[in-house]
Amino acid sequence: MAFDTPSARDLPLADAALAQLFTEARTRNGWTDRPVPEALLRQLYELTKFGPTAANSTPARFVFVTSEAAKARLLPLMSEGNRAKTAAAPVTLIVGRDLDFPETLPTLFPHAPGAKDWFADPAARRETAFRNSSLQGGYVLLAARALGLDVGPMSGFDAAGVQAEFFAGTAIEPNFIVNLGYGSDENLYPRSPRLAFEEAAEIV
Image (cartoon, rainbow, N blue to C red; front, side, top):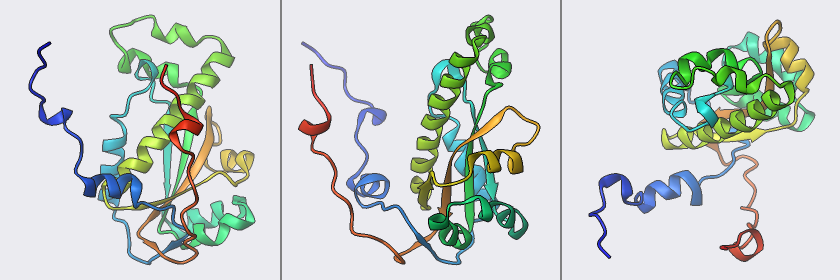
């Protein structure tokens, strides 16, 4: 059986890149005061947007909280355990899900003109928005690490409060929140165990 010669995209990343993305990367709780420029945040989005989603729906919406005024609005809505590290992080990203994402499908999925109608059922629309915005949130974590940033994802916050404060008058709901920047070793816990392949996976 003959196999084609592998192209560059078929080859694995170097060990150093895999370490930066996965094996040596850590969730950060402490942050240095090194700033994150706007241009880097825009580059982060430009990478994230290429991650695959169902019907190219891309329902995630992103709010990069960087100003003192915006942080002051967000901090009271964070759980007590997440408040101090969010205050210290140079950027806090709110990953939202837009329940009106079907409105963009004529542009994003033009080869299927009826795609907008696939999500007429509110429950299916909400499930699709949640699942695919979560995928995009995962992409943004890896893209951030690829660009040299550290990440600290969190789910402890007042969702209704964040929606009212940052997404009022829209169909966008918050999914989860991520601190971004250049991490310190403050409150860096030992790496927790992971499940072995046999405990979490099977090949059938």
